[in-house]
Structures are given as structure tokens and as C-alpha cells.
Amino acid sequence: MIVPPSKVFDRIISEYIDREIQEQQAGIDLTLKDVYYFIGYGRVDFDNKHRKLAQTLKIEFDDKAHLSQGVYKISLNEYLKIDNRTLGIFFPRTSLLRNGVAIYSGLFDPGFEGYAEMLMHVINPNGIEIYRNARVGQIVFLRSRSSFREYSGIYRTKRGK
Image (cartoon, rainbow, N blue to C red; front, side):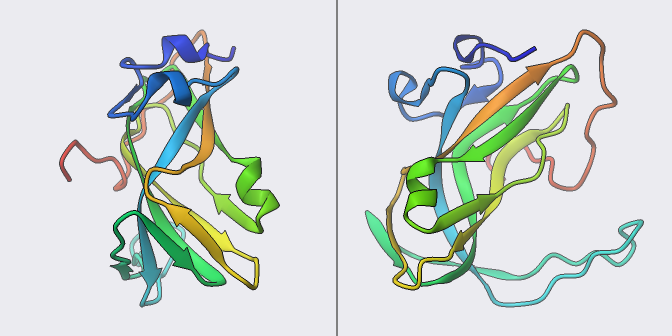
């Protein structure tokens, strides 16, 4: 079942900017914190013995940034703490899609805790001007009657890291 957005704030999502604006009909808007360039390559394999995360460089900007066509890593403001009966699915805002920008995200597994990072793909050859704290997408939470095996991967973080 879909978790009603009113039941998500302060239980699953904290460190949000404005509850009244971010609460939507079926989910919660998530907001842009930082943007990063990729400056190195990554590596993936079957059992993570050879996994290597691509090195990135933070793009410094005050209020807004003009991003050229390309691919960027983004981090979000909101802190997620998902219990072992809930999972989250992220969808990009249609305003971004209509401007030639896509955001890709993995599934937010049961037990995930931390700040989300995603991939922003600026497809528009003219780029995009994006403001800090812009609402970039919506997360919807699904809850099961039974518990899932809890996430324990390397992307699980605590506040302040």
C-alpha cells in the first residue's frame, strides 16, 4: 500500500525545507542540495570486490547554477530513514523533463538511511539553470505487511556524513 504523504514527515523524511510545499497528493517533493561533475571512472562487478566509485568534484554555486549538457551527480537535502517494511520509489518532476532534464535513481530499499544521491542528465543542448533547493522529484513510499531483509550496503550513511 502507498504510505500517505502526511504519515511520512518526521517519521521517514526529516530535514525538509517546507512541509506545506513539499507534501504532494501521493508523495513528497525532494530538493536539490549539491551538484557534482564526474572527474574519474567507476567500476562495478558481481560481488563488489572490485567496485570503485567514480570520483566527483562539487560545483560551487550560491543561488543558482547554469549546467551545460551532460551528466551530473546530485545530492538532496532531505534525510531518509526507511524502516524494514517500507521502500521508496523516486520520480523526476515533469517540469525538469519538459526542460530536457532527466533524473535517474535506484530503489530506496527497506532499511536505507541517509541522504539521497542521484544522476541528473541534462539532455537539452542549451543546458538548464537550476536553483539551490529546487524541487527535483517526488518520492513515493510503499509499505508491506511483512518485513523485508534490511539494506546494509555502503551507501547507508548517518547524519553529518
